[in-house]
Length: 328
Image 1: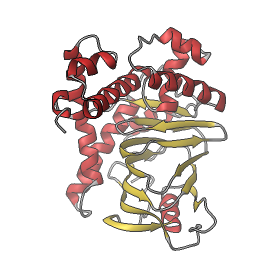
Image 2: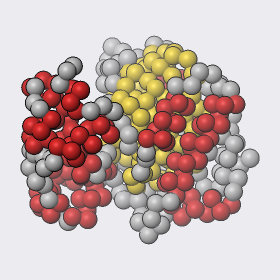
Image 3: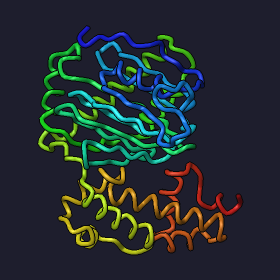
Image 4: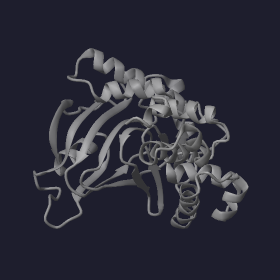
């Protein structure tokens, strides 16, 4: 098998993870890793005390794909950074707090639950993420380098995607997230767990490679773009019921509509209107539960012209009818 490597035993029980232990796992993935706390009185990399607690499962699968499933709770503020080698990496966030990843010196992306992104590293690049005590991160990470797959055609597809360093969002669905959740929650390291992981990893890789070949990964946004995107995000959150148009939001961000469509997901983790939909539904949910709104009121106050459309979107997101929220 190409790119085979010796990995430590997979751990699916809930255990404590020290900075050194997390760094060792990253190095098995080919990173030059550094994991440390950000406060002076809590663990540094050489300290055996834990930075996180939870499940961690990592393996190199049968096709030459590396897979790491985690469900970790940060026990103190810490930063995890590594120099990622030339490779494709797909991160699927399943649950927990939004995680901000810094790519290189100035770029960054944010991933939220249910989001996935393809990170193409055409050359070695620094990838860092910061966690506060109490932050939870349940995710599935898939990585593959050029010439590591057993299929030459797939290796060619990977190399084509490595023409530049950048980020592309990947579309997920409930079935794929359910499968990834099963992998992250599995007990033991038996053949069934490995088959589930391989199935999920292959689908994520296929979705990453199936993105429009004419669309190159976009460079992670710089600090000015991030600030402008945050201005748009804050407006959507402050005015969920308003009729927002992309051209107006792009003008607020000081960029073209096409740039906004690309850069907003890179910073926020969702497209503009996916984010707005979630803001509106959360606004409606709080009104139903805390203010006693009727479903019709919740729809109107959240920007939905038709209560039926609100109810359908609400049920799809929360798994229950909005009228049930009034009785909690």
